[in-house]
View: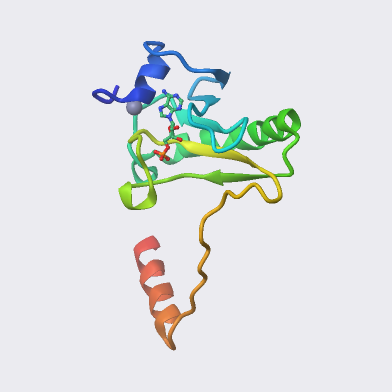
Length: 138
Ligand code: AMP
Ligand code: ZN
């Protein structure tokens, strides 16, 4: 358990949460500060701060339940769409340092979203990045 980790306390039952799903490795519950009604958080029971810390098997266990959770959120809220979001690090908006996946129901004109300022690559830059990423991933 992470020291003073609020999500570890939810896993341990020390603080309450509106749990909607649990299995051996994961728990899903309502976000206490919802961006929309039905906004869920999916977390691993085990404490890992960021996606880069997560064992691949646990990442797979989380991914495995996402389609069911997403379907349930859409069915219950009647939302027209759904965003899945996972923040890592303060620069990316992470506040709770226990890996979590947001499931956020969306409606046309709901005013949510973030600036998607698509850029472009200078000549050669995409090739360079591709080469470097392949090297790290090989
Ligand atoms: P993030 O910014 O990705 O770290 O998101 C953390 C999320 O956790 C926020 O959306 C909070 O509303 C939510 N949150 C914090 N404490 C609790 C809690 N006790 N129960 C449910 N959700 C929480
Ligand atoms: Zn934790």
